[in-house]
Length: 273
Image (tube, helix red, strand yellow):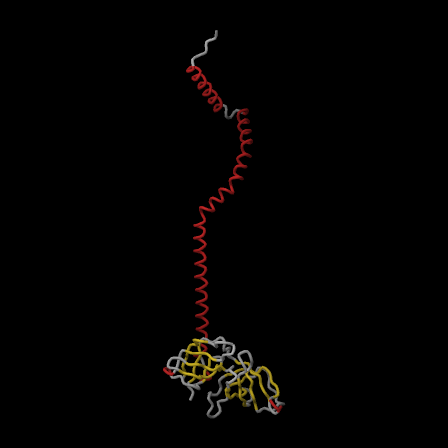
């Protein structure tokens, strides 16, 4: 009858065998057969690792997206804020340049001569398509009075119609109620200009013969005749076209105003008496 070795002896035997095999494997790791087995195992395992990577990648990406969302949102908010600040700075600079140009144009009035002047800022434009008046921030406290002409470096704007201590209302040349004596800069022929609305040219009733020839682009200025409400020589506009006036006895001129009354920042009141 065979006698089984004690359990302790079998355990020691197994440990010794495993240790021997381990030593042999490590010792033979560069032996071609062992190397081939190891590379073969890597070849088998590699596709499995790749598949696991592909399957788990969306999950890991989603997890990182969730955990990094607040950081990304904060960065986007910061970038949007910086962009808004940059755009606002550009707008402020453009507005300052525009106002500086308008102010310079209002101060440079070679046609005004030694007539006293008050430069004012436009604080309110026409309130509707049917309105033909603007409000300025200077009034009687600054020497502005009803009837005084208003201009810019580009030419005639209108005249003061209402005044308070610190503000005034200006009737624009485009107002159908507006009238001003004018003359042709080339010939000296006289006429009376009247407004026809914001998008229409001024109409000039003249005493010129309907057979007279007036070239398009001819300049028109204030006449400044005796007791005129406007000093002479303020540019008003240029002739766009001509036609026979009422009754066919005189020539009527269509004149484009020089000043864009919808784009005013500063104007100058001429203290003309």
